Amino acid sequence: MIPGKFVGRAALLALGIALAAGANAQQSLSEARSQRARVPSKAAAVAPKPELEAKAIDVLKATTDRLAKAQSMSFTAIVTYESPSRIGPALAYTTISEVVMQRPDKLRVVTLGDGPASEFYYDGKTMTAFAPAENLVAVSAAPPTIDAALKAAFDRAAIYFPFTDLVVADPYKALAEGLTVAFYIGQSKVIGGTTTDMVALVNDNVFLQVWIGAEDKLPRMLRAVFRNDPLRLRHQMELSNWKLDPVVAADTFASAKAATALPMAFAHPGGSAASGFRPPTKAKPAGKAAAKPQPTKTP
Image (cartoon, rainbow, N blue to C red):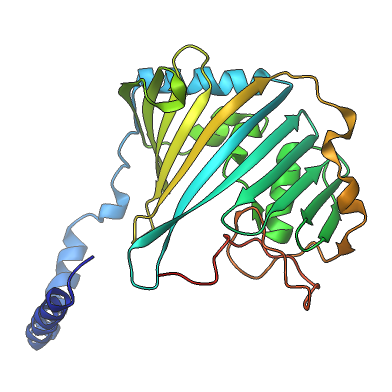
C-alpha cells in the first residue's frame, strides 16, 4: 500500500502538471493533430508474436492430453483466494471441493470451506444446486454435455468452479487459447509430495503459474493473478487425490437430501460469479446467489 502522505503529494504534483499543461492546451492540440497526420498510428502496428516456449507447451500438452483421455475422474481441489479487508491488506479465504466427473454428461462438486457449504449435481438432464445447511435447492434443465452445462450454470446462476478448465472436453484449448507468453520455470520437489514441472502461462487476462507432476503429468497446483486487477490479488488451487477412470456408482450424481429440500429459483444472484454459490436467507428464498463466501466481520 502507498502511504497517505505520498498519495497526497503525488496528487498535488499531478494537479500542478495538469494546470501547467492547460496553459498551452490550444497549441499542443494543434501540434498533436498535425503530428498525427504525419505519423502512422500505433494501433496499425503489427501485434508482437506470441512467445511460446516449446518445453512449456509440451508440459502443458502432456497434462491436458491425460485429462482429456480420462472417461471419468475424481480429485480434491483446495482453493485459496484473497479479498481486501476493511483496512486494506488482503485476507485469505479457503474452500475445499470434492469433484467427481464422468464424460460426457455427469459432474458432482461438493464444496466446504470459509462460507456456506454447497453441492452441485449434473446428471446429463438437470443441474441441481443444493445448500445443505439452509436446506434449499435449485433445479434447472441442463444441456447434454459437461461443457455446455457449466456454461449454462454460469450464465443462469453465476455458478463457476475454478477447476472448470480441467474437466471440459478439451482442456488444452481452454488453457492455451489466447496465450501470449509461455515459459518453463524449472522443477519443484515440494508441491504435491512429488517432483513437478513448473510453467508460466500468460494471456491478456491472467498470469498463471502451474505445477504439473513430472511423472504422472497431473496438475498439482495453480496460482493466478488477473492482469486487470489493480490490487493484484492472488488465487491459488491445490489439486490432490487424483483418480483417473475410476468406476463411478450410478447414484453419485444425485442427492436424496436435495430432493426433499425447499425449492428456490435457479437464477443469477445479481452479483459477480465465483466459486460455488451462496444461497439466499430463508426469508428470501426466491433466488440463488453465487458470490464468494464472505464472513460477517473482517478485521
